[in-house]
Each structure stands twice: as structure tokens, then as C-alpha cells.
Length: 287
Length: 287
Image: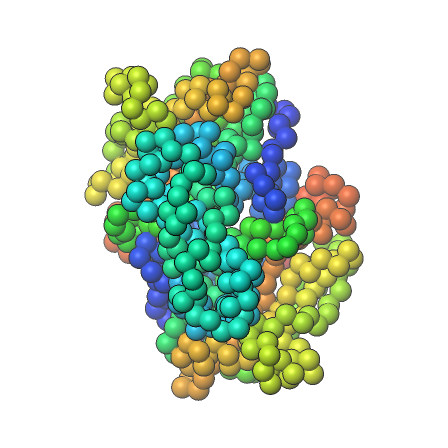
């Protein structure tokens, strides 16, 4: 079979929502394959995380205190609405209250679902999991691939000891900067003021002295990856233990669409960016 | 770094929501790689579809007349709710009406987003796109990996001529049955009564004589793939043309978690199923 030589322009369906055309989609897929390689070097076991998260469980992680503006609840049509829609009522003409909340939220980061799935676990000397998932965040404005309503986040989560956290994040940092170098990207590495937890308390003060989040930034300031220390926060809230002691946790995170953006920025167009990614992929496969 | 030998049990966060542990996640990823190979044989160009779909646009495709019960609207917290949550109000104690609908729905199938992104396109002799995406459907009951609230659907969409539709679906059918054979799966191939469109009209009668949907079913009755003819429905509604004439369209769809289910059914456990998938992958890579 022959494909059409020219792909039509693909329209985005709304603000902060993008469709990646074949050139950018290939870049996206090959970049995530490189992140999967880093996850493998970090001994991350692949998992597929949950598509929706219970609001009740997120509340226990202070999610709504810290990030209420980002949150995207899901809903249902009630029975009357289903009947009306089937009979031809316009979806915009349903009476108020026709879509009760389901009690489940779209994830805003990949690690929440993984951590919740581990509740009560004893992880022995340490456990590493990796997953890529679609994440959603309400923002006040959206901008190209830099700031999206829905995007993909690859994470490599570690749960274990404080020493294990240090090792995980140091190794992740080295691997991320090494990859960026091979991809001809210049990345900054900066502490970020975006605590996962306890934004008003004593921990927030501590955070300013000893940052829990560092971001890797493209030359235009876009944060395309981060390393995050959760200390014992999730260990305490979710009853996670490492050889009997409350577990510490940490994650390395890649914003996949943002890497596509940064590669386009560094190489000028999708074809040249893809050539570079494929060369790096081939070089790494040959190691 | 060393990984823990034993992965803790991963808890699912709610009905119809699953977390795939490493054994099942590997099966999931390798199976989708095989589907990607089929998409490639069908000349499907990779794209990344939109994460949410505008309700207004879906209404134009009769979505709410045909599938109102499946639909999952997304919402936002209004400004007052954001303030209350940040101040510590329990998410379940927000006043009614605190979460206005966003006007965007979660996708229930991958091809809707691809078709909407093509609105108004002239596709020449024919266009094939492929994507995997998370899809969501409200069901009255959920069951393991067979019936999920959120799941992944890989599709290979064709837009072009009636002859192209026939070729696309015949080739897809051959490739799907060939793959199933290599994976030691016995699949049934049956017409299904699940029209994409116009469930009450004259087309529905026509559908009973000339089915538009065929499903590939595992021995326990689980439909794990399908081929679907849309005739000129989307072409008309979305102004799609093929060399100037209203385009016809069709898709082949894989329910990825359902293939995991069917492979577990056929091979007894995830390790044996994965061995088989890896053997098929290796054989195909060597072709």
C-alpha cells in the first residue's frame, strides 16, 4: 500500500490540547524510547499506572491544599441526561446539575498513581518503577508544546532509603545531562520552588534552604525534566516501609512534549531533530 | 543499581481502573509494539491524538445520541472552590455546582480525535494514521482487564475511497489473524451490532444486512480487536474529501488491555505469555 506523500494539517481541538503530526509524533516516540532506556539504567520496572485517581485518596496526600487550581474532576451524565441526550437534546442545553462528579480526578503527575498503588507496601532495600502517562493541569494560559492542558509525563519513581534516594537522583541527573549532551541540547539545572507538599509549614521553610525539586531547563526557560525528593512524606501518608522503617521516596520526571519542544528549539525543525534522536538511539543500541 | 527481587502487589484505585504490574506491563508494551508493526505494514503514519475532545464537536458526530451513557465530561473547580480547597475544605464538602463542566470530554475511542483533527482535509488518494490513546467508557459493570473504565486503544485509521476502505480492512483482517496465529491465540471473527452512527435510522437496517463492524473475539467471548467501516459518515460530517469526492473512512482497532487478558487466557500466566510475544517479536524483527 502507498501512503499519501503529504499529510494534511492536523487541527488542535482546543486551547492546551495538541495533536502531534507524524514528524513530531516520531520525535515524541523516539524520545520516550530514550527515556525508557534511562529508566532501565536506573533499574525501573515498567508499570502502567491508573488512568484516574480517587479524590479521597488525593486528599490524604494534601493534593487539594497544594494544587486545587490544577485539578480536573471527571463527571457522568445522570440518568435523565442520558435519556435526554439519546432523544436529541443538545449537550449544552442540559439542566444544571446533570453531570454529577464521579469522585475521580485526572492525574496531574504520573507518580501519584504509582504511589497510591503501593499503599501499605514493604519495599525491602528499595523499589524503582517507571511509567509514562497522560497528565492534565488547568493553567491560566497555554502555549504551544510548552504549556499544555494534557501532556505526557515519564517518571522513574524510587521508594526506599534516604541513601537510595540520593543515589537515584544523582544517577538520574547524570543520565539526563548525558542524554541532553548527546542530543546537542544545552540544559540548565536549577532549584525550583514547587514543593509537592506542605507549602505553608516548616517544611516549606526547610525547602528554601534545601530544595526538594531541581529542574532541567531549555535555553528558553522551559523546564523539560526534574528530579524531586519527597523525603518521608508519601512514606508516612501511605504507610510505605523499607526494611521496616518509614520509606523515603523520590522521582525523576520527563515532560515528553516539552522535550519535543526543546529539540525543535535546538535543531530548528522536526526532521533535523529526528535525525539527531535516531543517531543517539542507534549509538546507544550499539553500546 | 539492584532492583528488589519481589515487586509488591499494586492496588487498583477503583472499579474499572487497573494498574498493570511489571509482568503485565511488559506484555502490554510488547503487544503494542506488535500492533505498531501492523500499523506500519498498513502504512499508518504515527500521530499523537488529542487528550480531550470538545463536546460541541462530538455532538456534530451524533456522539451523544448514540453513546450518551459512555460519556465522561471533565470539569473544573470554580474560583471559590479553589480557595476553599486551598484553605482546607474537604473536597467532598464543596457546595453543589462547584465543578462547572469544561465543555470537553474524555475520548471513548481513538479515532474520534484523529477524525476531528482532519476536519476539512483533502486526503488525495488516501491517508492512513495510527495512534494509541487512553479511552474511557462508563459501563454498568467492570471486569478485570475485559471491561475497564479507562483502557488503551490502538487504531489504524484510513480516510479515502470506498476501494481503499475495502483494501485497508481486508489487509488489517489478514494481519490481525496472522498475528493471533503466531501468538497461539484462537480468534473468532464475527459481525457486531454496535454501529458508530445513526442507530435508529435506515442505516441501522442496512447495517443488519451489511455489517459495518466485525469483532475478533477470544475463546471467552472478549472482543479484542475490530474492523469498522464508517462509510461516508465522517466524510460528510467533517467535510473530508478524497480527490474531491466525499471521503469514506474505516478503522482497525486493538483493545490493548484486552489482548493482555486474552494472552493470559491462552498461555496461563504472564511469563509464558511474554515468552511467546517476545519470540514473535524476534521472528518479525528478523524478517
